[in-house]
Image (cartoon, rainbow, N blue to C red; front, side, top):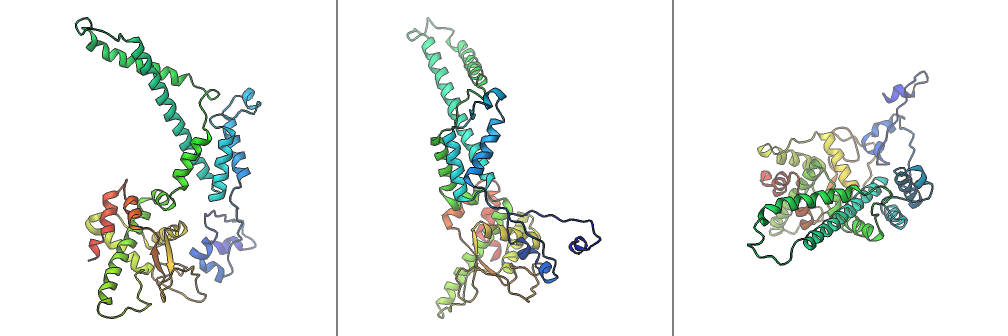
Amino acid sequence: MFEWSLQKSSRLVLVGIANALDLTDRFLPRLKSRNLKPELLPFLPYTAAQIKNVLTTKLKDLLPKRSAEEGFVPFFHPAAIELCSRKVSTQTGDLRRAFEICRRAIDLVESETRMKYENEIKEQVLQMSPSRKVLGENSNLATSGPSASQNAKSSLMKALQSLTVENAPRVSIGHLNKVTAAVFGNGTTQRLKTLNLQQKAALCALVAMEKRNRAAAAATASLATPTKSQVTAPTVKALFEAYCVLCKRDSLLHPLSSSEFREVIGSLETLSLIAAVDGRTGSLTSQTPRKGRNRQGLGCSTALGDDKRVASCVGDKEMELGVEGLGADILKSILSGEALD
């Protein structure tokens, strides 16, 4: 298909979009050897000014024309937008992260507003109810309960429906600080929460293999002094085989194909949840594929070859928190590594 697009008489144009700049080198290495490497057009991360402009424009689009012309921005104070833009630009420059922070900030304001109205309505109900009543004089108290509850719900709905784009409470700097502290405060825990089930399963399999390899290395050390080449980090091929065994045990999870598994490992490496390991010294390193080497096993020749070793960058406590939620039982079973024994 790539050859077809490069022929002089061809009218085929191939356009691909990827989050990684080195995707063609990692997953399409044969293109370069056949002089078919695509032309890359890198898009730089968004700057603070660009993020601010996008957020402000989208928010103003919610206003009527008369209000938009006055420069009023709904739902967010300008200072909060400025803070969000600067925070995201210094971290990732990912516009999607800015949208996520804004959504969570609006949810926080909505929750506070609802609670405020509920407390005000409860206070009004208490003020309207008689404070000193003998039980015999208020014989219909039990029957008035449901009616009072319905009135309170109706008042709450009316109060919320009275809010418009123009008069709704807005996100302040304090709200943004709470959200950004949760998003950027604990990097590893937050990144674990964003993983899908298969990504978590692959990471759990890696942690389980590392525990087993450490135990084996400790047993060997009692008999002889271990050398530097004895590392606990498994190869990608060994990790894939262990992952399949752990997933198939009691039909816990349908395992991915080898190529899909490579993509998962690549995504975990991009998120700095796993790292490449030098097989000779056991140290973390930034490896690049060697030219002229054709490795089989997990598909075609890539930077993620069979003999590449990987190690987890996640602590035990962080991993325990990361397996909570959807599919927790499946992930805990894989993390235990019992099927490897």
